[in-house]
Length: 408
Image (cartoon, rainbow, N blue to C red):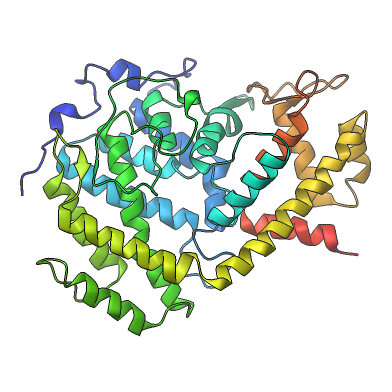
């Protein structure tokens, strides 16, 4: 197996577009004796963020389960990091950039997984806002929402590099692509209109996009077996079908076997002229596994019932907070009800203090980050703030505040 095939295209100091790749919207302060590269700094800024911490209580596929061994969003991004690091290392690409994109790619995922994403899209459309999709929301969160505190307790935006931000919004793992060829043009990432509209700008981003799918294919099957959503006999049927599709024979369908197979295939078949990709056999097998997962896991009746529950929670919380828009002084009215709903309203007030400006209310001096919700000039500031607030919640927290809402 030929390795290091992409070494001269790695996004490092030798790349002709490296200065663009490491560019930030503002200069980032420099700590004395900092040992990290620019992408290394991005990596640690992400894993120090609150959104990254909340991933441990966010749904991957099965929500709010009490089984410690069922995959969460946190485990998923760690699996993507592992898979992408191995592929990038063998191909000669920049593993620091790959790791940073991997840990940041799902920071904007809604609670309750893709079900929550669909409900937030419904709410957004009802209020004449743009569609909610987690790739763009992940960019929104790293650009506008997530904050880090400096040595003087002032809050700042993450201010990540262009290459990392591009990898995050370009990662859509639902695309069926045999090869992912990086795009050449540098674009304004805010011009993205839908998931998968553009390929990533770096080969490292292409690796993460491919690794995203590799990481969840069999992991979702393992969870479905553990939770008795699937029976082993059904998975054995999948194995027999896959083994009729070419020379490679699976002895078992589990995360280790599937990940190993696709990692080796990507390393063997990726080509600078074609991009990061798969053999014809592996591509067809991937499509078969995806079809199996949709039919037996993602679209079953239990998931549909769960989506109705998610809809009730998200609509109820949105409508409750949206009603405060009738007040001439939203912050003061919220303050009056804070004792009755201490978790929901207290945290929402804190959210507004961080990101909003109001008439007759001065921002706290420690918030030096950008203003996201302008309640003075933007007539939809309230709706935007509530959707962002709900999108940032973990499954565990949103159930707590919903229960607070319905408790007497």
